[in-house]
Image (cartoon, rainbow, N blue to C red):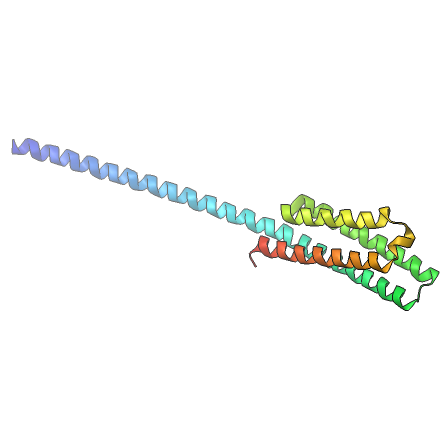
Length: 169
């Protein structure tokens, strides 16, 4: 009977060894799969950041440029140095900045985060409202200009925070 027990013990030992080997193989395969998925997710995050970072930078710069433009306009109006040529140049510059901001907004709405897209869309809505809903006379009121400076500053700060949140800064 001891020979039979020894045979059974040997068979059971071999079976357990084989099973252990298979379990080890399965665990290694699962671990490799997780590592590949993690690496792929990291690559996607890096790619998204590579796309988004220049968008945020461009939008923040354009927003700042628009804010500076409004600050210059306020100063010009406060000092009373308004002549036809200067006001025509202001209109051209404002139009160019609006086009640039619109381009950035469009790009952010496509490739940016949902929060940045919302900030950019709201900014564009407010700038468009300023340009279209107000008469030329109203647009040149100091109160309206101050309001736009505040809106642009707020949008710039929000975009900076959204970029920090997106990039873990």
